[in-house]
Length: 198
Length: 71
Image 1: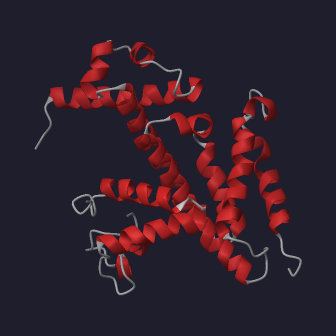
Image 2 (image 1 turned 180 degrees about the horizontal axis):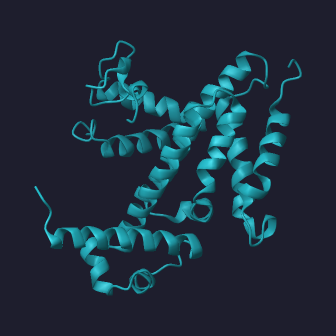
Image 3 (image 1 turned 90 degrees about the vertical axis):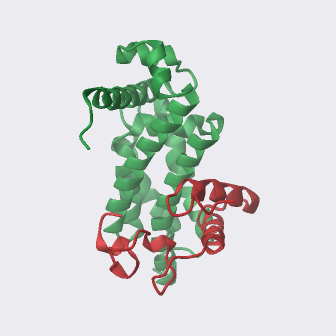
């Protein structure tokens, strides 16, 4: 059934709010953003936001689910072609690269976010850990990297990347962490994980 | 699901993906999927079992194939 002009406009406003909120969250973070900031930037009234989302938490959860979903899909597609751990790590960073400021806000604030938003964040880590664990287990089996619990190996990688992102103001002021350090971090991490047998 | 290899046994008529299928292609039961998700979270991310179980229940409740079956 064809949508009415009113339905189309409602959908467009909802998309505009999600896109505007994404931009503001990327710039200022989640916890310091108010509904009025998003309404003002989108050029709509405060009340219009509530027509589409019952609360700031609901809008936040929706924006995080949409953009985490895009990042997860992108990483999944890239990693699907990757067989080696190096290729999976590169796919991970390429997935982050497109939305780096937004991803960084998630790194620094995820503990304080509503459960639904935080769950979306952990789902993204699950997509990465799926590809990571497959590649890592293959390379452990082949004696290319050290044998250790795959969760520990994964968390070492995440800890490294997230530390650089969380402190982007120190590591890449005014620039992008992944562009500046991505390849160096992959090389250094793999060097540490390398088995002496290989 | 965007390509044949995302479907169980590459059967694109299925409405669930390879991660919800048994090796023979049939869909897992809710308890099987829940347990598999919990084990996956523990094995690949090192999440505590209780936290992993709570997370798995909430995650499955949002997926079309499982939301009706979530307790």
